[in-house]
Figure 1 (cartoon, chains in turn purple, blue):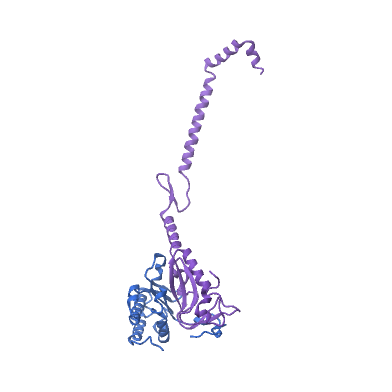
Figure 2 (figure 1 turned 90 degrees about the vertical axis):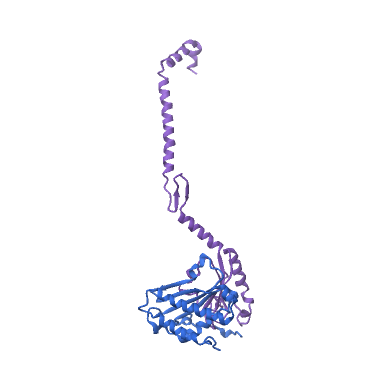
Length: 193
Length: 155
């Protein structure tokens, strides 16, 4: 408010002083440089951002196209497709005894370790999404002398449901009810799934 | 067929496999069992074949009959022939045409299975173990068994 007092007293002088500054251009020069500098700085930031953006480091399996588009590498895309197919493409199976004999029992009560199965008796119900050999290396299904019988093809979810129905209903099978000790699950199914 | 409590035993699990050399199995659509019955082959071959007669290159012979209408890429490794030198074992899967089995009578199915097994033994020749295992002698002995048309009738 102190500066307004002289202006009120001699407004002409005040305006003249302002004009002088303006006419000399001595005040304009610094302000113009400031704008140019700001524009340059802005352009620098923009180009720096663009530079940084265009030289992003990408993780293995991710690629940047010449157009600057980020995409999956063909190998990673193929891995995704394969894993999706494995989920959509599962098999529910039964492992049955290929001949009469002793088999390991994982579901027997009272600490019993083995069970005698007749040819064709179920040892286990299971599901697989991959090549079965990967689950049973060397042809061993968890016990010897078993046959792998696919029973249902479908998605992993559908096969899982089918497997559960079979496991839970196993005690109702004639081969299960004929025993004096009725098992809750097939001998090869330690758990309900 | 009766099943009693004496079915449940406490014998050590490892005794079950013993020193068996031959493992004849199957990946068979469930509706085709027991029309396709690898157990017939397992029983007779175990009684009559001793792999030690042919060398030390193979001590475990895993064979699988594959009888499925379709085999998706997920399960393509069900068919083939693999040799594991460190275990001296061979794992062979041979596919039998699904429709042929559906249409065949039981005797014809046995013939299809015989053919598949012999074809599987032939694949041993593709592995570099001819110096340590005489697969042709093995095959010849199996063929002799199959010459008897009733070889699988055991009872």
